[in-house]
Image (cartoon, rainbow, N blue to C red; front, side, top):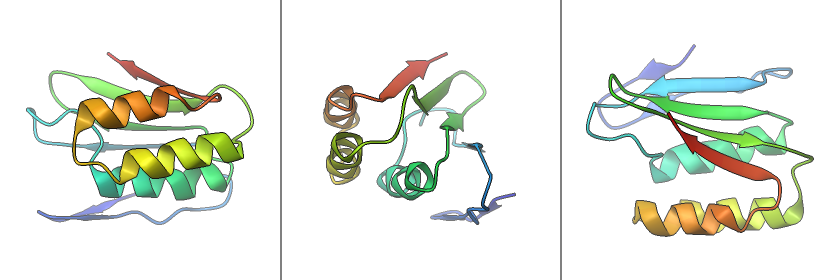
Length: 102
């Protein structure tokens, strides 16, 4: 269960947790930089998928294989950019990560 505030969300990562999802305002359907840093920690602890949910769309970042060093580096680089399109292209370089927009 995540504790949400206007400018941040506090999410405990529990051993054995495989999926996280949280909401964003309706016009913000991409991961924030803190979301991607949290995903980095989550996948490093064997997490499987994380999602951002709005009323209109959902974006899911998930693993299709073991979380590798290349995945770690791509996700770290994605978390350092403010541009969603650039972050997406950096994530495309991760061999075991996929992004889907629903």
